Length: 259
Image (cartoon, rainbow, N blue to C red; front, side):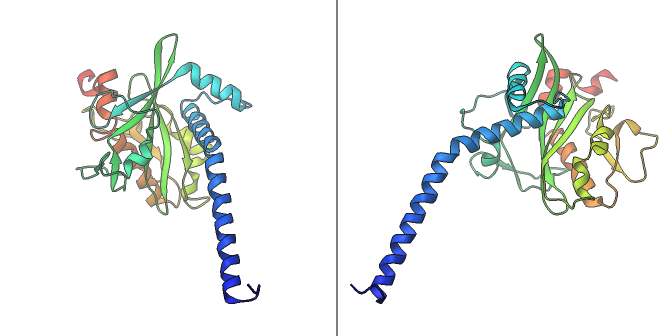
């Protein structure tokens, strides 16, 4: 068979494609455990960050050790106070895109801009000496250009914000991208999620926070109204009756019962 014939060219191209496919497939299989480990570590780091437990200079070993000592991952049936069991390999993000494991988001009130949400989500309880100190809740929703993913930490009263952390987004640097800034994170600390009726009432406002209702208001992102609105809506949704709200209230009591 002549090397420069059409058949020869076809055979060479086919062999190259098969070899390349084998190399890529093998790499994907071999690297998957490392990718999963890095994914788990990134989650641990961001949960601790939201809870205010990520200290400067902590290396990977220290982060993993702290997470193992103080954090319990709880699988919650969203929209209910129920704790459920899920397989070890369960991934809420994969469930969100699976018609058998998701729900269309069609509710009155704040919406996160997502078409569906998973039926079961993870919440993270931070406990010391056997007592829950805070709850870390995953939040996600649409901004201007992207879906934002983060965590919001509440004190053990189920209402007061301990911290917030965004770990993935594609918002404009210097504008919507300021969700990652320390100033924005600091503005959340001490704010209250629920009003006197037990309804999520977070508002991101322009021009600084003022009374009345300052306890629910956060200084919005300058020049990023759509991103600010997205953050407001996703927090109120995930802490509301269709998200983790029923579980939080079952653990800590409804604020409307305390007023």
